[in-house]
Image (cartoon, rainbow, N blue to C red; front, side, top):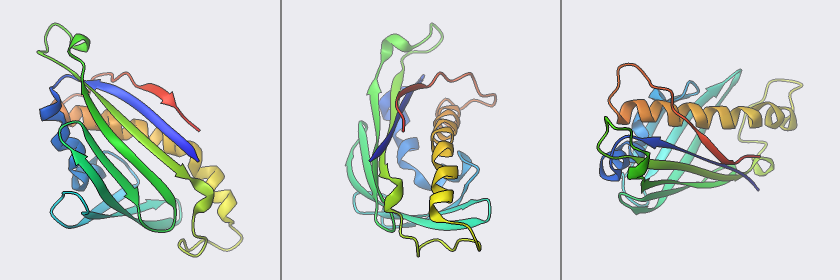
Length: 175
């Protein structure tokens, strides 16, 4: 299993950060490859999200289920189709990280554990002469940069900024 664990600080309390983390339907604004999100459920535990992705000549819909919510600290999810993956968004108060102009701060963690070779070869329509192994070797390095982009853009939204600030990301673990 591979793991991506990264974190950053947002200058808001966890109670204000968590609704952004929980709003999967807004995620297409945070990444270039997520085109849309469909929700089945009320947004709580057991809600299902269809994540419509596109990259290169590939399109794919990942189905994610929310497995646990402990607001405003944690939201756990797992993919339910075609690949073994699960993860968690965690939000922890970190008031000492707030600059003088901010009242407080929170550390946002993105944690994803996945097995890239568990992908169902029949789930993705690959172009002729393209193997799943080739796709995995091309996509895997992009996963970390995508996670970084999502977290950076998320912080811009959370802090209601028109101009993004430099967001320092801490990479705790990566494949």
